[in-house]
Amino acid sequence: MLLGHDFTTDLLLLRLKIEAPLVTDTADTVALRVFEDALYTIAEALRLAASRHKQLDLDPAEFGSGFRVVPALQGEARMLDIFLYDTLSGGAGYAEVVAENLSEILEGTLELLEGCSCDTSCTECLNHFHNQHIQGRLDRKLGASLLRYAVCGEKPCCSQPEVQAATLSQLCSSLELDGFRCSEGWAPETPMFIERDDRRIALGCYPGLIGRPEFLHAVKDARNVHGYLALNEYLLRSNLPDAHQRVRILFCK
Image (cartoon, rainbow, N blue to C red; front, side):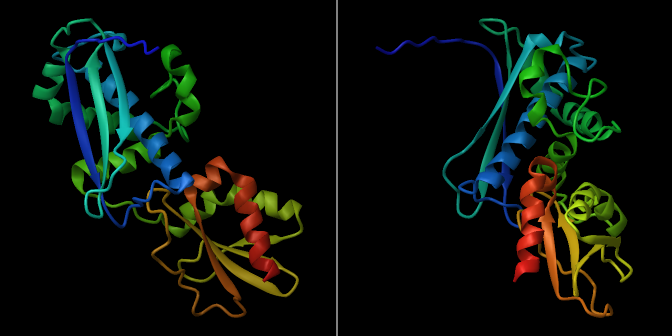
């Protein structure tokens, strides 16, 4: 037996085209989760920004939002759909108003994502009673990075070494408890050095949306460096034990 329900309403569909150097292989579970978290975040921010636009000024509950990762690649590009719809059966025309003011609302969406000081999300930006079930998936920086790429063509890039060092600080605390020595990089553009026994590696991190490190740390002037390791920033936030294990494995080689 198949049960179904038709819900007729007004809907706005936005399609984002993602290409290299951004990751497109959603068969990779980490890459898929990165996209899902970014899309959850953009969809929620778009709903809030649309409800606050001067032409609407509505309760956010008047909108619903969601996303879809299109299964098939188009050439080497991945398509991502974000949709916004009126929650009133039959539609109230709100999604149409959003479409007419889309540039301003997307700008407001970016301001909402980039204008807070929290790490991922909080009640000052994205969190509210009705999205408690997805608050663990919301990441305003990740969402802003994907939206900037889609709207402005700005590719995510590696942070400055001192910012990477701050991102790596929690991992370093974990490693130090395991007998490693950690120090901020004293060679140009090297975020962190990890040492144990007579081995030293250069450690850095890169944006989750890139999926692979297309860079090398500038450690050519550093002595006794035995290797390099670049970690996905999303992995550092979502699975610190795995990042810790990757460092251990490198020292065992």
